[in-house]
Length: 287
Image (cartoon, rainbow, N blue to C red; front, side):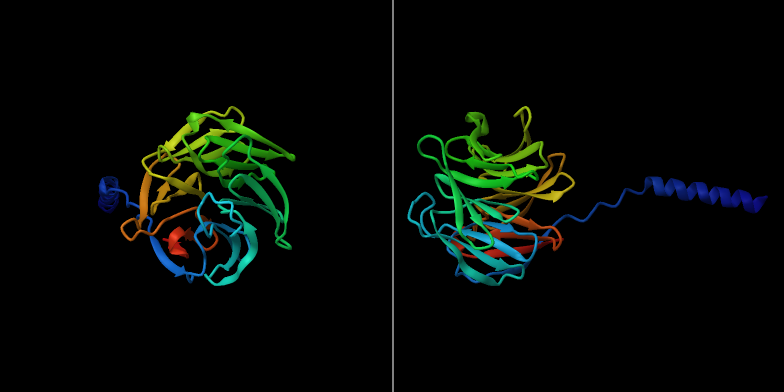
């Protein structure tokens, strides 16, 4: 009986100690540089993973608003080798990209261009509505609906069932740049004017701010479980949790290295960052 009482006492004491022990905090997320391309890229503004082994890179190669025909799309492997520098050329300061089946949608200053990925040829274009269009980022929902931001004119376009229209507009968008379709019901938007990551309900167009204080928000990619990576064009990378908690993971502003429209390869835990004026892609392993 004494042994049983001693065992019971030890069990109670152990349980009490465990209750007093603070839970182990998860290790903070960090970025570890994996590779960097050479510098033959020309003002890379965005990068997009094709789900296989290719990264598409949009090169402005000139001024961001010039209709000079010098822009092009490159193909880069997942280990940072430039496979085809000028896979498709003749574009005007290409920026955001979206992929659906074998169609690559690219913004081209005042228009959206659809490129056939099998031959690299442009198949169709859609012009901005009104004067002074400055189309920036592209995202494609799972059903093939394409959303495009117009950063300077506070507009978001939609291409659905071959119908091209201004889907949202107004100062409440606060200079939308990055866009990311989440399923069919939600659109994440980076509002550059207020440095915020915001959620738009597709059905009601209700806007909810998830996090702010991120300067010139540019690219948005999903990390999973409602979490996101967000780039600040000036050279910062943030991780934003589903509850809105944000953590700065990278800051290259002092080195004057930009962080433009990013992408994330979840299977490799690689975050790919176009450095804009530094003419390279840099890949970081997320740990």
